[in-house]
Image (cartoon, rainbow, N blue to C red):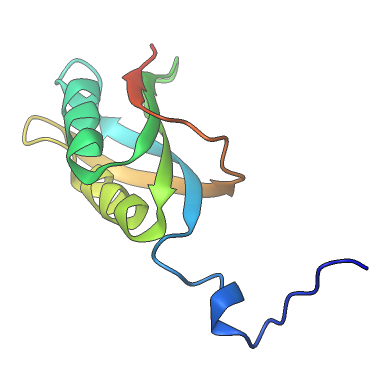
Length: 108
């Protein structure tokens, strides 16, 4: 017999703070050449999230963030502002399946 999960059962709730989520965040504005990636990596380590951050060809920055839902949301809030030297004009966020990242790295 297969395992049955009851959506009304709190133990199977998708809203738990321990749930691992993954978000890909594209940050636009003056975000390259201002220490954005190093600051993002520092913030990610502080919040306990994993993933990567990199510069993209169009002068935006992409952060791939994975971890507990609450910590990922805090990281997204930080990315909306960035470090004091950055000027963020907007972000785009998309949801992806977690990959099991174990650290946060600058990749490009």
